[in-house]
Length: 539
Image (cartoon, rainbow, N blue to C red; front, side):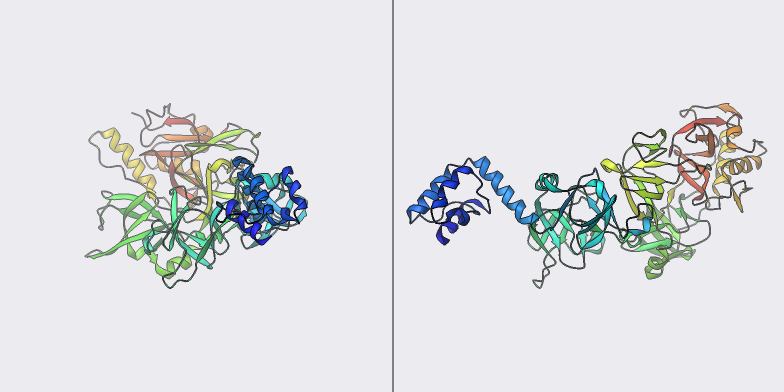
C-alpha cells in the first residue's frame, strides 16, 4: 500500500481521485484510500498486479479531469484550515471593525478584499463575527459567501502567496535595503500574491498601490532567518492602524506648523510673489528632500502632493516631533482615481446624482460604509449629503495628511485690465488658511463662501449681494473657455439651488471659504460640477 501511495504521489500532486471507475479497485485491499494524492511522473516501475491496475486506471483519466481533481484536493487542504469558511464577494473591499457599527470610522481595524477568506465565528443580524489574517472583528455578512458558494469562489482565488511571519516587514519598490524605497508596511499574517522568488527576495503583486504594479519583500534575512514564507493559500484580512498609516508615506517627514500657511518657493530665498509655487498650510505634510542654510536662514526642500519647492524651516517641524504632531492632523480622506465620479444623495446606485467630483482632488471622509463613503463638500445645507461609491477601485480611502497646494501668484501684466484682475486674485489668496464662519464676512476672523467673495470684491469697490444665489445674478455670464482670474464660479446643492461660490484664480483653481473643516482654501475649479460663472469685474 505504501508503494502504491508513493507511485500515485509521484504522478499527480495532492489530487483526490474522484471517479466512479476507481470504485472497482476497492476490492484490492483498500487501495482507493491509499491513492488519493500524487505528483509528477512515474519514478519507479510497478512491482505488483495491484500497482499495475492502479496505474492503468490513473492513466485513463483525461488530463483536464486530473487537473480539476488536483485543484479540488488543493483547495480542500486549504479550506480545512477554516472551521466555517467565508469568502468575500464584493467589488473592492469590506471593512473589518472592532464592533458591529457601520458609522463609527474609528472602529475600523482591517480590510477584506474581494475573494479574501475568513473564519465565521458567529452571525448577529447583518453582521458576521470573523477571524482572518490575525484580526478578530466584525464585517457585513451580506458580502460574505458561505457553503458551496464560498467553495466555488474560493477555488478561483487560491494562489501562491507570501505570508508574513514578522510583526512588520517593509514593502519596497526594489530588491534592496534603502530607506528611500519603502512603499508600505506588511504586517504579521498578511498575504501577498507571489510573482517570483529571487534569492532572499519575493516579488509580489502591489495590489495595495495604484502607482505600482509590483513590489518586493525580503523574505529571508542575511543570517538565514525567515521573515515570511511562501505557500498556496487564500487571501486574508489586512490590518489597518489608520492614523499611523498616514505617516508610512514619508521617510523623512516635514510638517507645516504655523498659523495660516507657508509659501513654497522655487528657490531657497524670499523674492515676494515672484518665486512662489505653492501654499503649505498648517498641518500639511511633505517629504524632506534637502536642507540649505544661507543669509536668510534655514530652508527645507520639500515634496508635498504635486508641489516641490523650498519652505522656511522656522515654520516647520521635522523628525519625531513632526511624527508625533502629525497624528493630530491626519484625516480620513478619499482620493479619487477616475476623471469624474458621481456624487449621490444616498449611499445607493439608485439614488439621485446631484454633482460629480474630479480626479487629483482629496475629499475629507465624514462617514464610511461598506461600499460607500460620505464626503465633505462645501454645502452649507446639512441635508446636502454627498455619497460616493468605493466599488471598482474608483476611490482610495485612507488616513492622510493634508498636502501643499500648487499656487502661482498672478504676475504683473502690461494690460491694465489683466493687472487689475491679478491684484484681486493676489489679495484674495493672502487669506488662505483663515477660518470659515457661517454668516461671517471678516477675511481674518472668519467668513462664509459668499461673505468671502463679497469682502474681497468690496476691497476693490465692487459691490455684491450677500448670498451666493443672488451673487450669481450679478455681472455677465461667462463660459469656462472665457473664464479669467477674478471671475466668480458657482456651485449648486442637490436640489439644483446655487449655494456656494469661489473666485477663479487661474491655473484651473478657485479660492473659496470652503467649510468649517477646511477654512479658506484653494481647490480645482471643477472639484465639483460648476453651474455658473459670472464676470463681476468688467472687461
